View 1 (cartoon, one colour):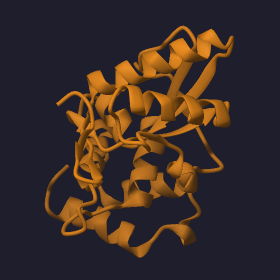
View 2 (cartoon, helix red, strand yellow):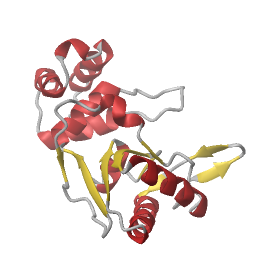
View 3 (cartoon, one colour):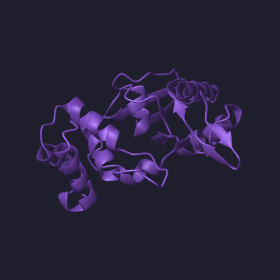
Length: 192
């Protein structure tokens, strides 16, 4: 499916590359009509879809964006127009932003009135490890597959290398124990 699918009173969203790009193009067009160029730092699953083609879809577009109020208002309008979940573009990821916020344009598409950036792969891995959603019965997406992909992409060979990398972005005493166990488990299972 190319857009989020409305089911009953809730949404099951599977935002594909095409749906995300369509919504971002529309956002760029609307920003341009207002004489504004917006900036969006994409995070999480959207980067895995757009920059790495590591998976076919994501639940939502986690991002940090400017100008906040205008982008938020336009995103709400686009959600209605394109039958997307109301929170298809959200900034809930702000809680995982490091003081060492290192970004790149990578190979992300760019739009006339919308500049896209993403965390560098090392930072993205650190963010994913800090979020460490394991999934399961809650219906939440799992970060494990993304973490495994990024560990391979970065050529990390041990849990220590991965944890040291996380500690470059977040204070070691703030790294949750579940993150340490998750990383150790990934290497013990021989996934990378």
